[in-house]
Image (cartoon, rainbow, N blue to C red; front, side, top):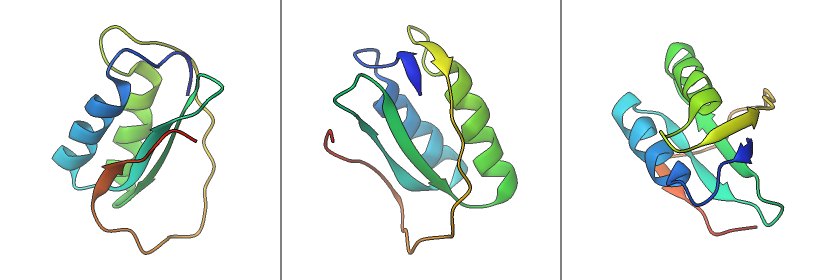
Length: 84
């Protein structure tokens, strides 16, 4: 996600949204000012996370979301990863 997505509690809200939907994966800030996330779970729940990502938390200003479909990974739970 790009835009105003760092410093607005994006990762924390993403974590809470994922927990509420039972979605596994992770989210992290990137040094270039974007946020990167991986969502894995039921198709409808992942779709809801992608939709949420277009809005983000209240103070975010999401300008662009890129979605890539990848092979499933052995993920359990959802976490905030360190900046990369």
